[in-house]
Length: 255
Image (cartoon, rainbow, N blue to C red; front, top):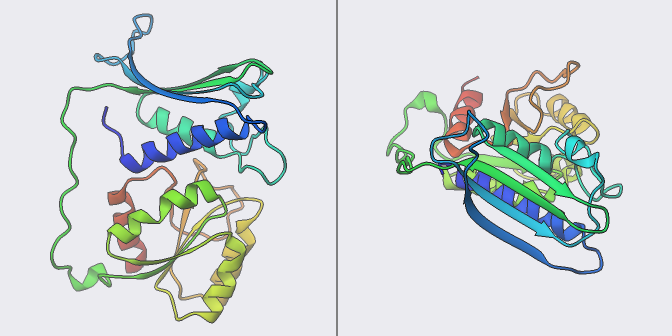
Protein backbone atom coordinates (compact mmCIF):
# COMPACT_ATOMS: atom_id res chain seq x y z
CA UNK A 1 0.00 0.00 0.00
CA UNK A 2 1.09 3.59 -0.57
CA UNK A 3 0.43 5.74 2.50
CA UNK A 4 2.31 8.50 4.27
CA UNK A 5 4.33 7.05 7.16
CA UNK A 6 3.31 9.82 9.56
CA UNK A 7 -0.38 9.36 8.80
CA UNK A 8 -0.22 5.59 9.23
CA UNK A 9 1.77 5.86 12.48
CA UNK A 10 -0.76 8.33 13.85
CA UNK A 11 -3.68 6.08 12.91
CA UNK A 12 -2.06 3.05 14.56
CA UNK A 13 -1.22 5.07 17.67
CA UNK A 14 -4.82 6.30 17.93
CA UNK A 15 -6.25 2.79 17.64
CA UNK A 16 -3.85 1.31 20.20
CA UNK A 17 -4.45 4.07 22.74
CA UNK A 18 -8.22 3.73 22.28
CA UNK A 19 -7.84 0.01 23.00
CA UNK A 20 -5.72 0.74 26.06
CA UNK A 21 -8.25 3.22 27.42
CA UNK A 22 -11.01 0.64 26.99
CA UNK A 23 -9.23 -1.67 29.47
CA UNK A 24 -8.90 0.26 32.77
CA UNK A 25 -8.40 -3.03 34.64
CA UNK A 26 -5.72 -4.36 32.27
CA UNK A 27 -6.19 -6.71 29.35
CA UNK A 28 -4.69 -7.76 26.04
CA UNK A 29 -4.28 -5.72 22.86
CA UNK A 30 -3.69 -7.65 19.63
CA UNK A 31 -2.30 -5.88 16.57
CA UNK A 32 -2.26 -7.71 13.25
CA UNK A 33 -1.80 -6.94 9.55
CA UNK A 34 -3.08 -9.15 6.75
CA UNK A 35 -4.28 -9.08 3.16
CA UNK A 36 -8.02 -8.97 2.47
CA UNK A 37 -10.05 -9.33 -0.69
CA UNK A 38 -13.56 -7.96 -1.07
CA UNK A 39 -15.19 -9.93 -3.93
CA UNK A 40 -18.62 -8.62 -2.91
CA UNK A 41 -17.48 -5.05 -3.58
CA UNK A 42 -17.41 -4.13 -7.30
CA UNK A 43 -15.34 -1.03 -6.47
CA UNK A 44 -12.67 -2.91 -4.54
CA UNK A 45 -9.07 -2.25 -5.71
CA UNK A 46 -7.56 -4.86 -8.00
CA UNK A 47 -5.04 -6.01 -5.39
CA UNK A 48 -7.48 -6.01 -2.48
CA UNK A 49 -6.70 -4.35 0.82
CA UNK A 50 -4.04 -4.31 3.51
CA UNK A 51 -6.00 -4.62 6.76
CA UNK A 52 -4.62 -3.28 10.05
CA UNK A 53 -6.51 -4.84 12.96
CA UNK A 54 -6.38 -3.65 16.57
CA UNK A 55 -8.36 -5.82 18.99
CA UNK A 56 -8.88 -5.48 22.73
CA UNK A 57 -10.81 -7.44 25.36
CA UNK A 58 -12.00 -4.36 27.23
CA UNK A 59 -15.34 -2.71 27.93
CA UNK A 60 -16.64 -3.02 24.39
CA UNK A 61 -19.14 -0.80 22.58
CA UNK A 62 -22.88 -0.80 22.05
CA UNK A 63 -24.52 -1.33 18.67
CA UNK A 64 -24.96 2.41 18.01
CA UNK A 65 -21.34 3.39 18.62
CA UNK A 66 -19.75 2.28 15.29
CA UNK A 67 -21.97 4.69 13.35
CA UNK A 68 -21.32 7.60 15.73
CA UNK A 69 -17.64 7.00 16.43
CA UNK A 70 -16.34 8.69 13.28
CA UNK A 71 -18.22 11.92 13.98
CA UNK A 72 -15.95 14.74 15.20
CA UNK A 73 -15.89 15.13 19.00
CA UNK A 74 -17.89 11.95 19.68
CA UNK A 75 -16.22 9.97 22.46
CA UNK A 76 -17.19 7.26 24.92
CA UNK A 77 -14.43 8.37 27.29
CA UNK A 78 -14.98 10.59 30.29
CA UNK A 79 -14.74 14.37 30.25
CA UNK A 80 -11.18 15.50 29.59
CA UNK A 81 -9.97 12.03 28.60
CA UNK A 82 -10.25 12.28 24.85
CA UNK A 83 -10.72 14.83 22.09
CA UNK A 84 -13.15 12.73 20.07
CA UNK A 85 -11.14 13.45 16.92
CA UNK A 86 -8.98 10.32 16.68
CA UNK A 87 -11.41 7.99 14.91
CA UNK A 88 -12.79 10.88 12.87
CA UNK A 89 -9.34 11.53 11.45
CA UNK A 90 -8.66 7.83 10.83
CA UNK A 91 -11.98 7.67 8.98
CA UNK A 92 -10.84 10.70 6.96
CA UNK A 93 -7.57 8.94 6.10
CA UNK A 94 -9.46 5.84 4.99
CA UNK A 95 -11.72 7.88 2.70
CA UNK A 96 -8.75 9.82 1.36
CA UNK A 97 -7.04 6.54 0.42
CA UNK A 98 -10.23 4.92 -0.94
CA UNK A 99 -10.22 2.55 2.02
CA UNK A 100 -12.55 1.92 4.94
CA UNK A 101 -12.68 1.83 8.73
CA UNK A 102 -14.65 -0.96 10.44
CA UNK A 103 -15.56 -1.02 14.14
CA UNK A 104 -17.29 -3.91 15.83
CA UNK A 105 -17.73 -5.08 19.38
CA UNK A 106 -20.11 -5.92 22.20
CA UNK A 107 -20.50 -4.42 25.63
CA UNK A 108 -18.20 -6.28 28.00
CA UNK A 109 -16.72 -8.32 25.14
CA UNK A 110 -14.09 -6.01 23.69
CA UNK A 111 -13.75 -4.08 20.44
CA UNK A 112 -12.13 -4.80 17.09
CA UNK A 113 -11.03 -1.92 14.85
CA UNK A 114 -10.02 -2.56 11.25
CA UNK A 115 -8.39 -0.04 8.94
CA UNK A 116 -8.57 -1.25 5.32
CA UNK A 117 -6.24 0.49 2.87
CA UNK A 118 -5.86 -0.40 -0.83
CA UNK A 119 -3.04 -2.83 -1.60
CA UNK A 120 -0.74 -2.13 -4.53
CA UNK A 121 2.27 -3.62 -6.25
CA UNK A 122 3.62 -0.17 -7.15
CA UNK A 123 6.94 1.02 -5.77
CA UNK A 124 6.78 3.79 -3.16
CA UNK A 125 7.09 7.31 -4.55
CA UNK A 126 9.94 9.14 -2.87
CA UNK A 127 9.61 12.85 -2.14
CA UNK A 128 12.16 14.83 -4.13
CA UNK A 129 15.14 15.99 -2.06
CA UNK A 130 14.95 19.62 -0.90
CA UNK A 131 16.71 22.14 -3.09
CA UNK A 132 20.15 23.18 -1.92
CA UNK A 133 19.29 26.84 -2.27
CA UNK A 134 16.09 28.80 -1.93
CA UNK A 135 15.09 31.97 -3.70
CA UNK A 136 14.50 35.10 -1.69
CA UNK A 137 10.74 34.93 -2.20
CA UNK A 138 10.62 31.52 -0.52
CA UNK A 139 11.34 33.19 2.84
CA UNK A 140 13.83 32.14 5.52
CA UNK A 141 15.49 28.76 5.13
CA UNK A 142 14.99 27.95 8.79
CA UNK A 143 12.07 29.37 10.77
CA UNK A 144 11.44 29.56 14.51
CA UNK A 145 8.06 27.85 14.80
CA UNK A 146 5.79 27.64 17.83
CA UNK A 147 3.69 24.48 17.42
CA UNK A 148 0.57 24.13 19.58
CA UNK A 149 -1.85 21.24 20.05
CA UNK A 150 -4.18 20.30 22.89
CA UNK A 151 -4.31 16.64 21.82
CA UNK A 152 -1.26 14.86 23.27
CA UNK A 153 -1.62 11.94 20.85
CA UNK A 154 -1.49 14.12 17.76
CA UNK A 155 1.11 16.36 19.36
CA UNK A 156 3.61 13.50 19.68
CA UNK A 157 3.40 12.83 15.96
CA UNK A 158 3.35 16.42 14.67
CA UNK A 159 6.71 17.94 15.57
CA UNK A 160 8.96 15.76 13.40
CA UNK A 161 7.72 17.08 10.04
CA UNK A 162 8.76 20.75 10.39
CA UNK A 163 12.00 19.72 12.10
CA UNK A 164 12.79 17.42 9.16
CA UNK A 165 12.27 20.46 6.91
CA UNK A 166 15.04 22.25 8.81
CA UNK A 167 12.94 24.48 11.07
CA UNK A 168 13.47 25.09 14.78
CA UNK A 169 10.30 23.96 16.55
CA UNK A 170 9.17 24.85 20.07
CA UNK A 171 6.32 22.47 20.96
CA UNK A 172 3.62 23.60 23.39
CA UNK A 173 1.18 21.27 25.13
CA UNK A 174 -1.38 22.17 26.31
CA UNK A 175 -2.27 25.17 24.17
CA UNK A 176 -3.05 27.41 27.13
CA UNK A 177 0.70 28.03 27.55
CA UNK A 178 1.13 29.35 24.01
CA UNK A 179 0.32 33.01 24.73
CA UNK A 180 2.67 33.03 27.71
CA UNK A 181 5.54 31.69 25.59
CA UNK A 182 4.80 34.16 22.79
CA UNK A 183 5.04 37.01 25.29
CA UNK A 184 8.16 35.86 27.14
CA UNK A 185 10.43 34.20 24.57
CA UNK A 186 12.26 35.67 21.56
CA UNK A 187 10.02 36.37 18.56
CA UNK A 188 8.76 33.43 16.51
CA UNK A 189 8.49 33.44 12.72
CA UNK A 190 5.35 31.26 12.58
CA UNK A 191 2.62 29.87 14.84
CA UNK A 192 1.19 26.48 13.86
CA UNK A 193 -1.83 25.65 15.99
CA UNK A 194 -4.71 23.20 16.01
CA UNK A 195 -8.29 24.43 15.74
CA UNK A 196 -10.63 23.24 18.48
CA UNK A 197 -14.03 24.85 18.75
CA UNK A 198 -14.16 24.51 22.52
CA UNK A 199 -10.64 25.42 23.67
CA UNK A 200 -8.30 26.95 21.13
CA UNK A 201 -10.43 29.43 19.21
CA UNK A 202 -10.06 32.14 21.87
CA UNK A 203 -6.31 31.59 22.12
CA UNK A 204 -5.87 31.84 18.38
CA UNK A 205 -7.91 35.05 18.26
CA UNK A 206 -5.89 36.53 21.14
CA UNK A 207 -2.64 35.61 19.40
CA UNK A 208 -3.82 37.40 16.25
CA UNK A 209 -4.78 40.52 18.27
CA UNK A 210 -1.58 40.63 20.36
CA UNK A 211 0.77 39.71 17.51
CA UNK A 212 -0.87 41.00 14.31
CA UNK A 213 2.30 40.47 12.25
CA UNK A 214 2.81 36.85 13.33
CA UNK A 215 1.87 34.39 10.55
CA UNK A 216 -0.55 31.71 11.84
CA UNK A 217 -1.32 28.36 10.21
CA UNK A 218 -4.29 26.33 11.44
CA UNK A 219 -4.02 22.54 11.39
CA UNK A 220 -7.53 21.16 11.70
CA UNK A 221 -9.39 17.88 11.86
CA UNK A 222 -12.49 19.59 10.44
CA UNK A 223 -13.35 19.12 6.79
CA UNK A 224 -14.34 22.79 6.90
CA UNK A 225 -13.92 25.39 9.61
CA UNK A 226 -17.12 26.51 11.36
CA UNK A 227 -19.04 29.19 9.49
CA UNK A 228 -18.32 31.83 12.13
CA UNK A 229 -14.55 31.43 11.79
CA UNK A 230 -13.53 35.07 12.13
CA UNK A 231 -9.80 34.31 12.04
CA UNK A 232 -9.63 33.96 8.25
CA UNK A 233 -6.39 32.02 8.54
CA UNK A 234 -4.84 29.49 6.16
CA UNK A 235 -5.48 25.91 7.18
CA UNK A 236 -4.08 22.44 6.65
CA UNK A 237 -5.70 19.06 7.31
CA UNK A 238 -4.30 17.14 10.30
CA UNK A 239 -3.76 14.22 7.95
CA UNK A 240 -1.19 15.98 5.77
CA UNK A 241 2.06 14.93 4.19
CA UNK A 242 5.40 16.64 4.57
CA UNK A 243 5.33 18.25 1.13
CA UNK A 244 1.85 19.67 1.92
CA UNK A 245 3.24 21.27 5.09
CA UNK A 246 6.27 22.60 3.23
CA UNK A 247 4.08 24.17 0.53
CA UNK A 248 1.66 25.72 3.02
CA UNK A 249 4.46 27.17 5.16
CA UNK A 250 5.86 28.74 1.99
CA UNK A 251 2.43 30.19 1.12
CA UNK A 252 1.92 31.59 4.63
CA UNK A 253 5.35 33.21 4.78
CA UNK A 254 4.82 34.91 1.41
CA UNK A 255 1.54 36.55 2.44
